[in-house]
Image: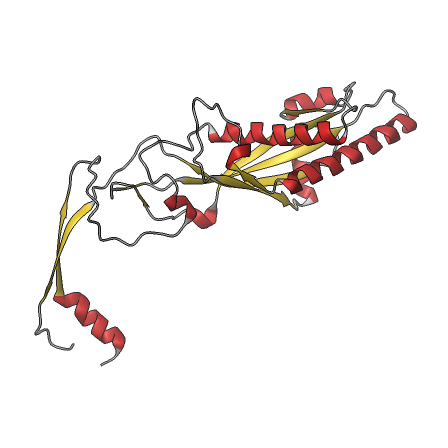
Length: 259
């Protein structure tokens, strides 16, 4: 008899009786279950709500602080300002009087590879829905000062923008893995767990996709950096709890014929 055939018979010959505890807060932990090794299913194993809707705001503020701190260290006298922005501000920045680096969230999407993650096991043995695995896409653009509409002024501004591009690349390369200590949040209202971190990845966005971003705002094309932040687990506001398994009674029923 093959191993697969034997296993099939075994599954048919085992009777399993399972009892549940209807109280979601029960602390009994006599559990028979296989738990996923996926990082997002292991996160949030307590009943404390973390990684809420504020996670997107937190990441944006984190990127700005990382970049601003690095710029102030490398170019302390340049007076460069780093800020969150949308294309609404870009037209004004074409005539900025101080150098600026903008961080523009142009896309938020679900991570396709982790879309069908298994349910999460909580500390009391119950299970709930998995986190929503998010990825955030950012456009980082330097804006140099153009003091006049001349080729010389444009060349000087372009040189300044190239310098800022290098600073931004270095800053984010140093922080390709952003640990819990660097994630910005209100200490009184934490939204991250102690072991949380996010990945910051430099993307090679096709030139055509770059042009689409600028064309949407009817703006002149500018060389920019594109980054993807992954993977963020967004906590659902509603928990679909399944009670823990308390007892499992196994009994052997011999006599099934080999089919």
